[in-house]
Length: 137
Image 1: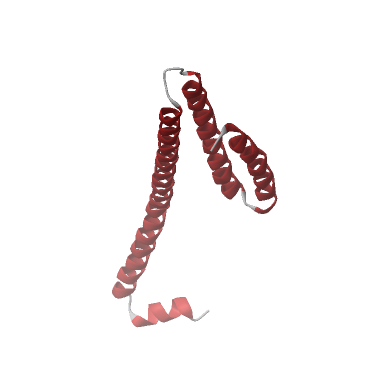
Image 2: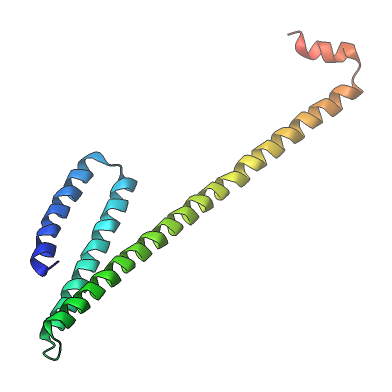
């Protein structure tokens, strides 16, 4: 993989990003944009490292090839780490959102239970004729 290959990749990704913007929701598009930005960062890292390797006159061609391979392995590892962090972050955000909804639903259930209990308690103390008078209208 050389710089020209990386440079040809970016316009294709931009086109796909623009295409995704037409069809995806805001959340989906945000995820795609994050991945696109990660790829740009990876490209810049690779280009800078390749340039450093090419400028090093002490390295033989075989050493340069080995160094480039190591750079690509590092870039892939970095991209995988970013992906796993994002997945973990998304999962945490999703769980936090779910947990923030849960208490309100729990409060509603508790309130409903207490209201029903109060009604039952009142009905238990009333004679049957008084209970029927409430429901006859």
